Amino acid sequence: MDINEIVVGVVDVGAPKKIGWAIKFRGQNETGQNLDDFIDRYRELVTHHPGALGFEAPLFVPVNRKLSNITSQRSGEAGRPWSAGAGATVTTIGLAVMSHVFEGLREDLAGTPFTLDWHDWSSKNSILVFEAFVSGAAHAGAGDHHLDALKAADTFSSAYPDLSVANTVEETRVLSLAGACLLRAGLTVDDQDALSAPALVIKP
Image 1 (cartoon, one colour):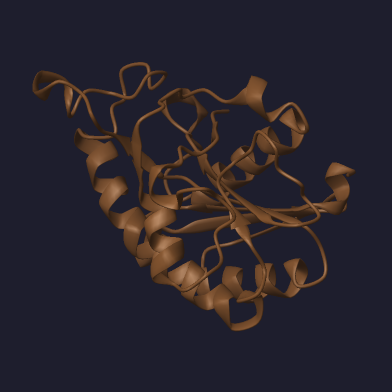
Image 2 (cartoon, helix red, strand yellow; image 1 turned 60 degrees about the horizontal axis):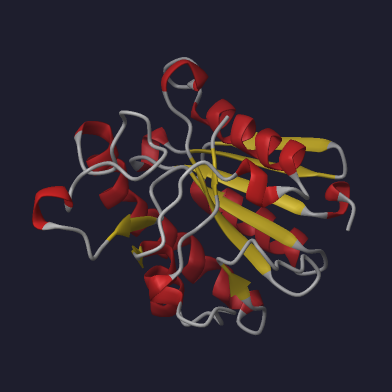
């Protein structure tokens, strides 16, 4: 599948006034700040085209570690752990934002499968949910959250189809926050166990 035929949407997670989003499709970019506008536009496009959907927030946390390491950074986070500072905040807010997006998409996509498995992803058959990890120097200026979302969408598009090579966080035993939100929204999840599936992590 040509990447230009895949609707790549990314939401930069934050409080309602600090959300930014971007959609790349057929060589065109759309950006905005209103989350409901994103839901409407993304749903419109993926009703007829394959899609990938990213959130700039941790989509899974590691489990089954030694007690001393249960809040340690995920392998590949490079000093910016999910459990501390901005990471902890955006992890929590991400649950609310993902749930809102998935609930909004359910209206027209209840029969469309979603997946967290990028290894065997068939873009024609399911919507791939992935994590965007925009940090440090990769961040745009204050208030330009839509540019962070666009940067993540650009990085995903550039990496496709070699998504496994582009993955930057490796954890095998996880609790999937994205999987929990998908199930809570009543969407079909095309994975063996959505609650235990790590997500692709794209880092500009």
